[in-house]
Length: 308
Image 1 (cartoon, one colour):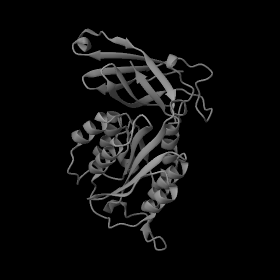
Image 2 (cartoon, helix red, strand yellow):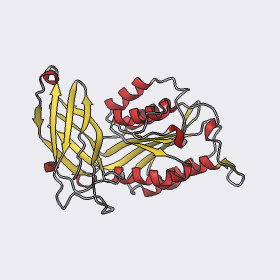
Image 3 (tube, helix red, strand yellow):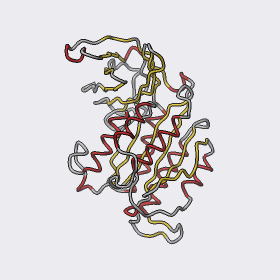
């Protein structure tokens, strides 16, 4: 490996640092592309006074998942109180398992943007929808079709308002029907409210049975939610739910690293970074299918992590 990236979690007042190490032959990415960088992120919640658990996602420079990690590849250091000022920490015991090893399935709340700005790309009279909306829906349907037989998903649509079109189910047909259904959309962008709704719904799904996440898509900035940014983030972190964000923006608003030019892109980066998810930039709607495929691959190849 040429570069290893550590990642951080905030767990109450405790700072938890994870260092991914060891690049033996069993640690690979499914595409067999040479790995030059590892990025790790995820979410943690306390399960007792002496234990925390959550989900860990490891990806390479192309957002492909890294598989084959074991507990020997991860070092965990906890810092709390005045320890941060002195530079001291406590090394913990960590257990890393793949989802199949832990017996967990996936539970995902998807949020879909139907605000007025999505009405672009030409109108498809057969589908009675704009092409950009159809591209978003095709991306979500690709994600749904990639789910395992026991994975569950929820479909949330929003403009100025938020509505759950399909509660959690493993029925792919029910989910696709919800994606295809037409609502009364075209208003503003209640992004925070949609994510908050997904997190709250996931809070009722057992974290011992499912690796949980929100996948949130938008083509613009938040301007309609009754929930503020900090409340949304606190709720996601309190429930150990990572939020994946997808931003469909004109290239003139995008920067490398993302978020330096456009406030809306920075917001999506901050949401993902603050909750343990990943941000994906879409320069055009036709790339959404590939992005949803990448997210599906990361979640399918995620790890459960237990710290004691």
